[in-house]
Length: 168
Image (tube, rainbow, N blue to C red; front, top):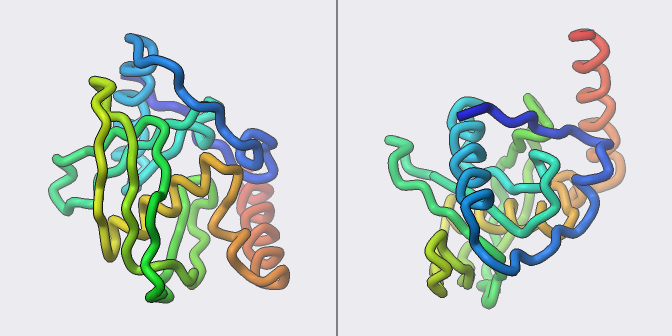
């Protein structure tokens, strides 16, 4: 399976809301498999389709240490958020090497379709809840840096641009 290219800001696909998936087909199943391989190789714990330049509401996640329990989510939506919030460090495969403290609800409920088009619900807390919110944000054109002050966001984006210049 090929590794997909992971986009970085300011690529416009990262800021565009993704389109809902109408039906699961072989191409979508291959995309999710390729996204998982890409995510594991990066390495990361979550990847949304817009990060690989596909404007569809598809996410893959695996927060297990063993990296053997992937979750494939199609058209995921947060249906409930806890009132309790927590601050924790987040990073992103689209912003390699960049991290910041982000405040999010500690628990969420997410509805989605699985790869067999069965309706599913996940009740999550902790790392899985944070990862689900982060990846669903990607589907809405939101990066974790959008949750930061303008000063912190600009610092991260400048460091990322400098990294790219040094590699070039």
